[in-house]
Image (cartoon, rainbow, N blue to C red):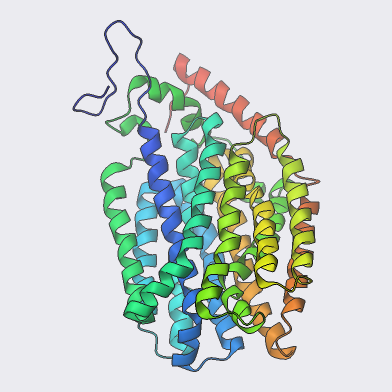
Length: 444
């Protein structure tokens, strides 16, 4: 039971139980993750009317798709560093307000150049979102709950993205593509108002957190606290583990960005589907990907994450190759959906590895990984546009590059051992906690 101040109050004679404020923080993270994907995926459904209204070629549209990924990649690391330094609360408010403004301005574009500039700025505004959400969950959740939260968060992003094609099609049909983007922007501002009121960077400063919940989170708070004498973040980023982590994520994202950029157009041109049928079929990779992320987050601890990631990526490669050989649009999309599921098994694993490897530099490592992922968000649609423009719209060539990327991701996991780094950080956190208890160390 909870009293008026938000503190958990035990029944008479029973021990005090930890409050559950951390779950409201998880809900905020899930809401923002869903919003970010709705706002970035919407342009794929609007690509048809935008191309017609602004008289764009496929190559020009590929560059516009890629503008988001390029700027997101360029600004991701600075935003992650800033989150590690000034705190999640300050940086996320800035991020969401900026991306909401540029989402709305997407509807004001009048030619290819103006649309490219707005989408570039939109990507810069959204940069740093997920690294800082990862840091937020790392501070607010004990280690056993962290992986489950990552799985649920990435499942929600995929499902939010899956709901976007029909949602965007409805909004575009009712309001036109310009006003549809304004409506999507308003959702981000509403989230900001709730977050600003409720969230605190330090659980100890939240009025609804009781002593028992604070003790539950103590190891997580110490884990992400910077201590004098620890290594510089630049040195960390050039370790073998971080480099393998970012390469596998670049290749994962190279495949994934096809689903949120070219896929509706592919279904219309290569498979002859109507706009409505294409929107319905385009849901499948993101829908199935959500189940992959959720399932991975719920895996028992004894299951090797490295084995799951390796087998998942090789399965993705095989299924995407099969996709090019299946004539039925529905069954082909089922194969692509399962390919998305097997690759998205690695999403919670990859982001939790950022905590294991990064420790106090969790947001910085996560930002580096996501920077490369979003660099793929620039490379993939631009390469796709060039391939389509110069191959007579041979879509299979583009799919084969995705097959190769999935194989590379799988091979990277043969050399990744994030659990070893995680054990080192946990040991350091335990030592720091003991020092704090004896008064020889104080938290910043």
